[in-house]
Amino acid sequence: MKKSKGKLVAALSGGVDSSVAAALCQQQGYELVGVTLRLRSCDDTTEKRKSCCGADDNIQAGLVAGMLGIPHYFHDAKTEFKQEVLRYAWDEYAAGRTPNPCIMCNNYIKFGALWEFAEKIGAEGIVTGHYSRLIKDSAGEISLLRGLDIVKDQTYFLAFLTREQLRFTHFPLGGMTKPEVRQLATEFGLPNAAKKESQDACFGYKGESFPETLSHVFGEHAPKGNIIDETGNILKPHQGIHDFTIGKRKGLGIALGKPAYVVDINNQSGDITLSTNSDLLLSNGLLCSSFNWLIDPPKKLTCQLQVRYNQTPVNGTFEQLNETQGKVTFAEPVRAVSPGQAVVFYDNDKVLGGAWIDGCLGTQSSRLHF
Image (cartoon, rainbow, N blue to C red; front, side, top):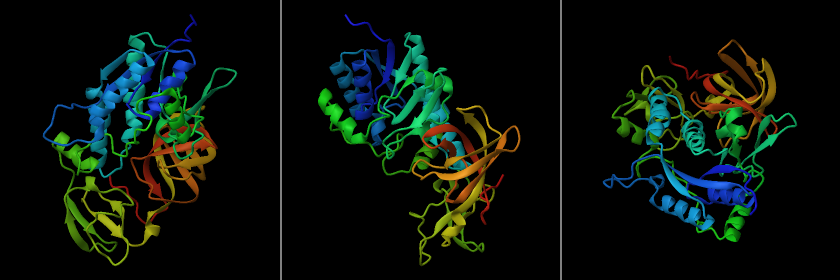
């Protein structure tokens, strides 16, 4: 019998990516234990919930585990998910900031609660279906690199993992494209090979936005106020600043003759400022804090910068201002930089680290109201 390369926990979501990642690691000689995280209660049938409640996903995960011949468990992470992801997201929305729950879910749930489970069963690491690459140098230091499929690359959401977390993680899909993963799923005979990719947010009621659902979950309300124009004229009242993000254009219910954008959210007055001048969304830089470096912490840095998942990185510089805060300057203005989101630092494909955005620099709209 061939000796196992070690025991890994395979995060099985029910989707094709996590399934192929598990199959590849098994093919490489690892002993696998499949785990599906339970993030929410599915016993409330009075509302039609989005897919992550997961009856179908859970079934698919079980079928994949059965086909691979590996044990499969459900791990209850509902408490951690509500506290570390949902509570955080609501507090940010209610403060007029734009949260990034996917980053927090990775940190505390997928690479937090899941890793704790792995330790309990004596596993040596975890494997997930993220499109990212890990490389070790001759000294054993780990580097996080973009996935080769640039459309699917997920390093932006992984930039706040620690080097210790990455050291025990496997990303088998990092060197592949989505079509190649689909083809492998078919070749492996996986039951979910043709499963459609979910486009839903991972938590919410159908017909509601994510922040609206959070308001119901916690029974809390964000500050109400008015939607105003650049000169302060009141256009209409609104029911809560949680419904707005910097750069939002659709669903505002106001006709100004041309596209209008949210350019400022004031969490003190509750005012939401709209403008038809999209240049007001441009920033020359930002202030950031709460750093996570995957290199030795720099005082100054020339790099590429990404301020949201689907943004093309831009050149710029980072400078440490003091022990807690840094300044980023863009080589060219960047649109819709949002406090509460993350800025991720790259050296070409290599992730250098990440930080949380506190505010914008060089805009006519400060977007800072503390």
